[in-house]
Amino acid sequence: MAKRPKVVIIGGGFGGLWAAKALANKPVDVMLIDRKNHHVFQPLLYQVATAVLSPGEIASPIRRILHYAKNIEVILGEVVGFDKENQKVLLDDGSRVDFDHLIVAAGARHAYFGNDHWETWAPGLKTIEDAVDIRRRIFLAFELAERKAALTGEHDPLNFVVIGGGPTGVELAGAIADIARQALKNDFKAIDTTKARVMLFEGSDRVLGTFDSDLSESAKEQLESLGVEVHLNSFVTEIEPGRVKAGDKWVDCEVVLWATGVAASPLGKLLEVETDRAGRVFVEPDLSIPNEKNIFVIGDMASIKQENGDPVPGVSPAAMQMGTATAKNILADIKGKERTNFKYVDKGSMATIGRSKAIAHVFGMKFRGFIAWMLWLFLHVFFLIGFRNKLYVLAEWFWAYLTRERSARLITGDALELRDALVFMGGEEAGRVLDELHKKDRGQPSPK
Ligand SMILES: Cc1cc2nc3c(=O)[nH]c(=O)nc-3n(C[C@H](O)[C@H](O)[C@H](O)COP(=O)(O)OP(=O)(O)OC[C@H]3O[C@@H](n4cnc5c(N)ncnc54)[C@H](O)[C@@H]3O)c2cc1C
Image 1 (spheres, protein in one colour):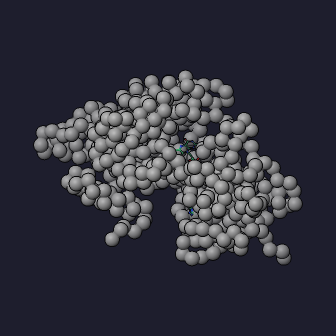
Image 2: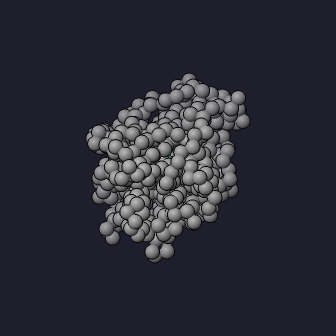
Image 3: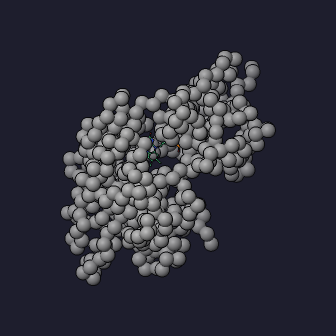
């Protein structure tokens, strides 16, 4: 019997998973490699970071999602390079995996524009571990203020800074304001949580800059109605323990969150093809890389233009569409048929700001406030993977809507170590401890 073509997929995010689904039970052998055992529904990560949802409600084991596909093997492993000439993928333990077709869908992380050391003080949100780290910082800040106020009668002002006015920054700022003004206000005795300041710094002249300006303006007003201080045209140029510099002013803050800048997976550069400044690979119209028709780069790692000249955005529908399109082209190759060029279908966009607050531009129509928020809720539950997750998330949202409660308000991990780092140590020592905690959370060894 003739050997079936082998397709290797790197990444079980939106791009890789949708490619795998389209190849399920088709005449190919598929191996999907991911360094995590789970697919994360990233659009709801901020709800884990702000304690509405628990990690298990927005993540599912990749193996479980694809269990019905007899031809797909899922492997836990970190890809560290390629041997293009011999058609092999290199794993961190030295293993080499053969492929006939390769789909690289390893996504992106946040970029600190050459200031990687800022990550210790201003974490970004990309993984479940990031979300749990951010949740810990937010709730620990309230605990430490309460402790200080209870023991000494006073505490430092509770200031939260969010850097970046894109969808993640807006969601985080709105949610923290809601936590301070509503969810916690009756639970603390010595501090008034409603006095916490939430500041959003955005370098351009509007938040949610990819939306039309009237929707951006509405988002800003909705944020302000939640109590968020929105600072436009404000670039953050320095981050130090306990303070950030925006423009020429230093602002004291307990918690800083980074919600700007994107850097594609370094795997793009390892393919030795041209990339843009963010490390995205310039792909051909069929999403293959130049001169290698059997290697495809998709999702947040790919740089490609739409028919109107705009870049295809780094959003989940684009990654899903690229995954499906690539799988179809591989199957077309096998059948000896022509490939089809990728065409992004933009179904619109939406962003949530807080309870009953959102903006949406879908089906050519614009929505603000409650209707936009309902649309956002409906779509996110619809696309969430797994019936159990949909049910749990709906139940959590209903409960949170009725009670304003955030049921996942846990400070997990080494809260005391973190407290020591933040409160009792000087800047450098605190940086070292935070760095170690950070690495421990991501399963990386701590520096000796
Ligand atoms: C906080 C946040 C909120 C978002 N909100 C929205 C939203 O509301 N709407 C929207 O449309 N989009 C949203 N996005 C963007 C959307 O999630 C991405 O565009 C989408 O996930 C890209 O899919 P991908 O497959 O390219 O990468 P990802 O989904 O990031 O998947 C990459 C996968 O590759 C794996 N991986 C990476 N490196 C390696 C390696 N070396 N070896 C093995 N495996 C590896 C990772 O573990 C991961 O599973 C959001 C993103 C974030 C971070």
